[in-house]
Image (cartoon, rainbow, N blue to C red):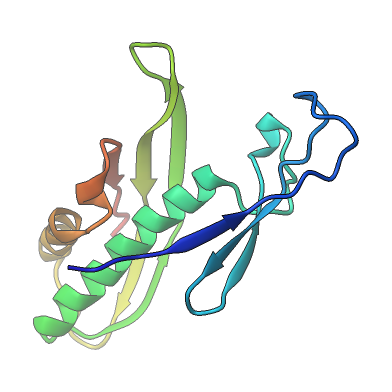
Length: 149
């Protein structure tokens, strides 16, 4: 139905190629011309000034949830004025001892226009958003939405 493209570019900037020495900084280029400086997470010798894949994964989940939530609200004629999320991803080892992002917790704070839905309705809207989110449907990571209403 749709194709999404990202071009990833890396160039060695060090004389050697030992694990502790080679650069992890690279670029993500998207079809709209956006360029993101990326690197490994600092724990894996990456540049902390860059976005790392794990952060991007968490942001992707949170962004998809938000966009799906907004679409649901718009279709239900529920007016949203502001949406902020402080999403957190946790990396653990799986049964095979491999690192993976095992959980992402979303903490959306939503401001509605005059007629804000009651807390239980907001829970239902977020549950619907989770069920319809393309990214959530694409991963094994447990995704929890924690609402502080």
